[in-house]
Image (cartoon, rainbow, N blue to C red; front, top):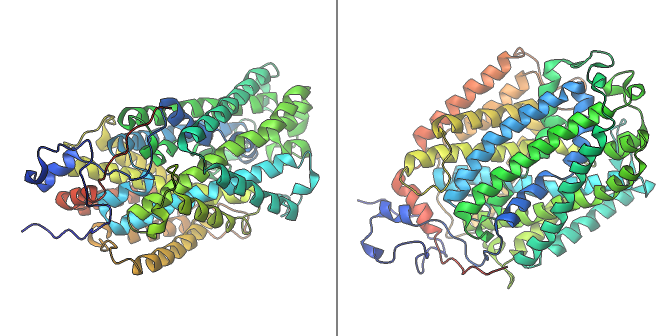
Amino acid sequence: MAPVNHYHEAYSSGPRPSYADPKEGSTMSTESVAVTSAPADVGLRREMGLIGATWSSETSIIGSGWLFGALYAAQDAGPAALIGWVIGGVAVIFLALVHAELGGMYPVSGGTARFPHLAYGSVAGISFGFFSWVQAITVAPIECFAVMQYGSYFWHGLYNPTANHGNGNVTTTGFIMTIVLMAIFTALNFLAMRLFSKVNAAITWWKIAIPVLVIVVFLFKFHSSTFSYGPGGFMPYGIKAVFAAIPSAGIVFSYLGFEQADQLAAEIKNPQKNLPRAILLATFIGIIVYCMLQVVFIGAMPHSVIAHGWDHITNTNILSGPFAGLAGLIGLGFVAGLLRADAFISPFGTGLMYQTSSSRVGYGLARNRYFPQAFARVDRNGVPWVSLIIAFIAGLFFLLPFPSWHALVGLVTGASVLMYAGAPLAMGAFRLQVPEADRPYRVPAGGVVAPLAFIIANLIIYWSGFEVVWKLGVVIVIGYILIGFAMAFDRNRPPLDWKSAQWLPVYLIGLGIISWQGQFSGGAVKPPLNTDHIPFWIDMIVVAAFSLVIYYWAMATKLPKAEMLRLVEAQSGIEPPEREV
């Protein structure tokens, strides 16, 4: 007897998608159906080509991170920060490979929020879906903070660099202007995707050109001796500081965004080919740019500025606008002016794109029937307008408790990597559940890459420190309450698949305990909240071993193939015809 299909979704009925074989129709078995069909989104329009898809990821990668990451990484780890950028880049490559396979396989809107739903059902889907949404809605505020911090050079009332024990905070005026800027992001997102894509492409060309120009010009001021100058030499604060800098100094945050093409997959033309290419191309460009920016930032730094150590830089121009301040200090005034202009454009483009992806993730969660169905409403331009407005409102709630770029970056990184952790689990499950499904891009050695990517994601969360982890835990609990309330009023809500997600509470609580007992605090709280009971190096072995246990436990309890295929079929619909740009 076939299992009962519990997923009575409003969009599950109707004609089969265009890529399903209509000749087989009702004679097809449940398992063969999902090999030829795939989830599809209704109301969204495929109007974005390869360049637009690549730039959707690239504009998210080259954002405020390049304006601040090099300074904060150098302050935390000295010249050895370059090692952190390389480690972070390698980690992101593994995660990008996984997202490239998943996105090509199932190109749906808000993909990172939906892959775990298809592989493990509702409980895992709710969790990783909410992580995706939190990550998306918090990036726009952090980009606004970057604009305020750099903008304080012209309007001193926007940002106070001496507030919060020297860490800096936006002022009341800066807070109000942040809200105004987020409202502008929201308004621009009501443009049709093909017009929005052109606007974003123009901004992204500029955003890439300026960092490349900085790299070239700063090379003329490069001094290799700076890499060993000052107290402690190349690695003044030890290897532990290098690992801590990867999440806390904004290294991983800077690389975030490669998955944006996945979030917009339902609006990309020929997504099976264009989406994997876009993700991988954007990732490699971002890694090269960021590593070179760190090299020239260190190499161009005057010795007098770091005479007392990288963590004792006191030049206010560098602290408020690192590259612009450094350019002015070394006699590149014209570059400083250009950088202060770019300090508005780069974060603006990234915040704009994340506001877009926030609305698509919310749309995807409504398609999963976790969020209210109003989130899935689209206007005549194919914009999920309710989800867009709610993303704006929700983003405002993260402004008050985290009133600066540096204060919010740790939480955003933690939420992002928790979101990323769901992708390797989904890929591993799909490889076992539907090995015969069409995969336009197939990750080489996927059986090794998937668990390794899961380990990497958990290491980054661990390096974020316990102060970040416990705050993220509070956000997760609030999310469970809100989603539970929304689902309680949905008659067609999916059943809770506890059996296939039995590993999830052990994973979340266990990772929190390891973080509490480990070496990384992740904040300025004195005394630190973590205990340091697990020795350094041993702690990372513990995280890796724990990750493998959870990964293979998840593989053993994944949804049965037939049930997974019914979830895919429940979200199949009519693909709107492609429109030429």
